Length: 296
Length: 288
Image (cartoon, rainbow over all chains, first blue to last red; front, top):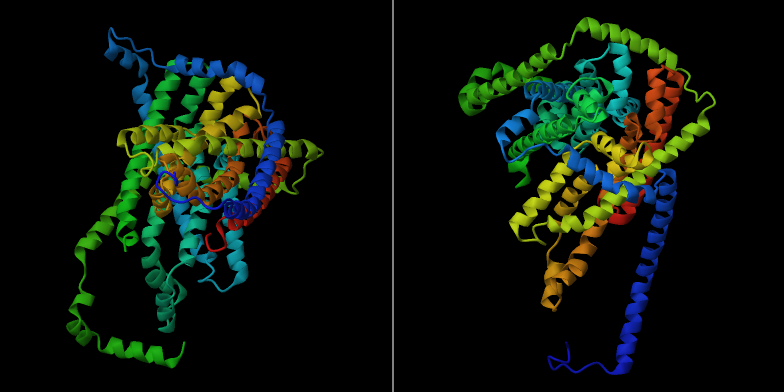
């Protein structure tokens, strides 16, 4: 291309020099990339071995996947489509009630967990609490709440409290405490410390400092994180029913285990639509909450 | 604390009326804000009350359950594998394998798709919209539901779990990657185009070097969180440590349950540590 525009090409020895330098410069990066790829490849083989990946079975059965998707497609004909949709959604009132229950579970779980995380986050924040042991204790507690998946809590609680949506709420609340408590305490650790110093200099107690110096700075971020968590919890509440902890999950599990194909797709579409709507709504709200600040 | 703030406060208290007169704006009650706050709080509490009523909460049940949880806590001590340590370790390896394979597959599949969903690569809004909504559908189906579907295809076992994680992460990665690509610095790409590169050259030399570290750090972060999801995927029969966890909880072998939970905690902490290190190495010490 350079020739076409009338530029003189470099003399061959200069060009050899330059390309030699270029090769030397890129060789190190290339070696590192290759080493990284080799490590990933080895790990993949190991993981494939551990996870019992059988490509042959996969290749044989991938047809089943499309067949399954085809099978759960709703039986809607062109002759009387409205009646077909009605038949497809024969259980709509019941499913809607269960969906409402799922949403309420997610809401209550987020609220309770958010309140607990809110209280713990100030204790876990390094810039507010002088006592090292108190802080470390709060942090570890949040970590345990966060690491144990909510379904595991639900499994244990179902035995302790009995079946029902209350168990789902408690399980979601505990997991949410851990997740939100960590995020909240990170927000608190990043605040502007000058108001805090001002208040403690004028003799405010710890609670007063938190109320008037910290809270106004963090509240919009907290609300935004809580909404994000609500979104995640709606998904989580949808599967709580798998272990008997209420919501629409139970109905879905029954449909999928008993091969009620049309029901599977009907409930799946309902779940997806609900999650969609919640996503959109919380995104709107979050933009309104943090909008003016992020555009500073 | 010292005498001075107290004295200041006493002086201000004594002088309150004149302060009020001098700074009326500071002392006025903002009724609209108050009403709005009250309405918001009322809504929150009202919904909570509705939930309390609809979801059959009852204090008696909670107290009873707490008593039982207390006795469970006693039964959990001391945590011990009771001779099943190697079986558990094998299951944990399986779980890690599921998480690793699922994350890697999702990342590799999502990488090209994310470019299709990014505004600065595909200017056509309709194509972008279709790709994004497709990713949203994948994302809004929970891992456990994906696992149930894949079990129907490849049978019970960890392979179905890996596929399930790959599917649900594919949607999440597609979204995150495309956002990373959109916020990428556009000047290198413009430079490539200005010196005669094609649009593929622009992506390869102008965009990818900039976004790759960000993407790698997101993948690492997801590997960490997938280790947690992979522990529960066994509940529906898709392999890993969750299978043992479910069975042992159901038969109340709580010492082994406590041991398993400890194993999971330690593993997740170790992965957390390694991936934080790796992330720092990849994106530099400045970024977290």
